[in-house]
Every structure is written in C-alpha cells, then in structure tokens.
Image (cartoon, rainbow, N blue to C red; front, top):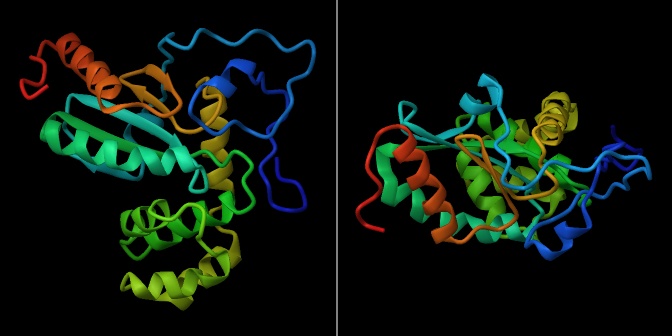
Length: 225
C-alpha cells in the first residue's frame, strides 16, 4: 500500500538480513516476528504468463530464453546493471528477450518515475525514458519530467499531465505485488526462465544462467562466452 508521501510500503513481507550483503536495494519494510522463512535464493519461481510476456519487452519476442527484471529507477544498483544487460542483449541477440517490471522499494520518487516511464510509453517512448532515468538515478528531478520528455522528442506537457493523473499508479503497485509474490526481496531481481537471481549481477553470472536455460531448451550455449 502507499503512505501519504507516496512511498511504497509492502506489509508483512519477510525481508532477509542477508540482502544487506547483496548488491541491491532492499524494500523499506519490516518483517513481523512470526513471518515465515523465505524460499532459498536459487529456488525457481513460477511466473505468470503476464509477467513472462509483459508490456515492455526488449529483444526478439520469439526468443527461447526470457529474462524478467524487477527494478527501481532510483536504485543505483539497477542503474549499474544497465550496461551489463545491454551487452548481454547484444551478445545473445535473438536468443534472449528482456521483460521489464517496476518494483519501487521505497526511494522518495520511485513511484512517480515508474509512472513517468509508463506515461512515456503512451507516446512510444518507454525505453527512451527508461534509459534516460537509469543513466542518472541519483539526479533525476521529478519536477522536470516535462522537460525530460521534451528532450526525448515526446510531448512533455502530456507526459507530465499523465503522471499527475495517477492513472498508472495501480499498475505500478500490481508490479510490486507480483515481485513480492514471486519472491523478490529487493532490486534488481532477475528471473532467467524462472531461476531467481537477487541483486546486482555480473555479466558472467547472467550469461551463465542464460546458457543453462538455452541448454534446457535443447540449444547450444553462446559460443562467444
């Protein structure tokens, strides 16, 4: 649910102390003393068709391997993951697709920025806004969303009005709830064909997971690795 400041607080979520040792942003929520222990990190989690297909997809929609990412635009570790993902998508070309979902974990403007990306998507500019914000996660000013949109060739005023309308608030909240249900403890969280990877991942870590998924599909590993 949302508090009056617009920060996402997810109640009754078992947050693991070990997340602090993972390069990632943890949700700002406290687990109740009676919370059940979370599933092991490497346990595959079934994802719904909606999460695996998604609205915002990069790569070949027919690719055999699907990477689902849950991220927060104000999480510095998510921003640091971008060049890794870009390299991976280039190297695996038509063999991997990336599906992006929002998981605002409690930074001051996480929700507004997630809404801004979705609003940009109305004008065909989701990925442009996504990339723009992840290049400067600590300096994006929510008061300048209109200017940012205009700089990307979008209708900045329409984008700003869309964010203020709050019409994507429920979809952002739904993404966050889906992340929690799938076992995500913070951002970034990845699912490579259902295998969960918590926190910032190196190129080798992600490519190893992708190679294993390719083999499971009866395909060869990436020869360039």
